[in-house]
Image (cartoon, rainbow, N blue to C red; front, top):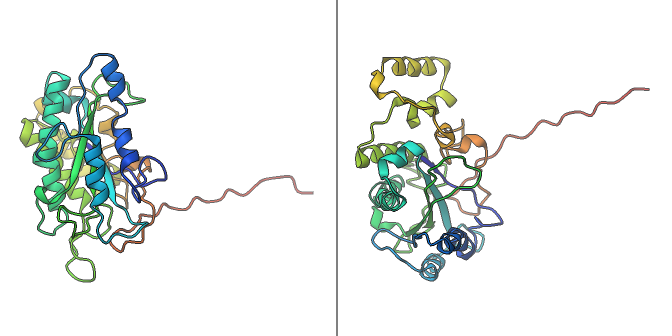
Length: 292
């Protein structure tokens, strides 16, 4: 399961203003599917389906109490199963879409709420989801995934919630709580396996990819030994697809399971709760020429 947090930008993911641009993007594939006579999925939240885009924009844009002009007003989250995981979610697009909504409601949002360490539940999170069925630049046959837009403020419009903060269950200081993204990835993966009875090989797990990408040599050797000891009938029969290959967290940055690609660095914010993770500076290559 690939989960990531697209970084704020000046374009579609600009989260300092209205959510209208992102909501428009979330509907972009509907027209093409309707022209082909293929069903589409409307926006949904924790309890309701078939929600109009206008309601989504209104709810997200009005839930911004005490936020400054340049503060983040909402965040985007992508939830993308692998082809093998999709196979466990159903045989048709409609079955997979219903399974995805169930997974978001019963696993992703509850774990998202818990990871702030502020005693929150899924009912405290203001969010909307939209399911897409295709993906640009992908050769996979199955590409269903879900876009989430989550308000910066909780349902009461009182608590600030930032999944991009570097704090992790902080007990003292001006900021308490935090958000543990790695723990979210683990819990979301384990919740998926329980919900759909998915027998996940170790080589498909978050722990495996994270260890092989960021672990020490001794940790990587221990992980490989675990794979060797694993029963043969639980080993994968196929080579992991591209999304599975991304399920590792680059050292020092855990904004998403695909952050290894270096595309998930948030922009600075005035909020004390949200601290950007800096990219390493590129070394300048000296110009070479002929000496006279």
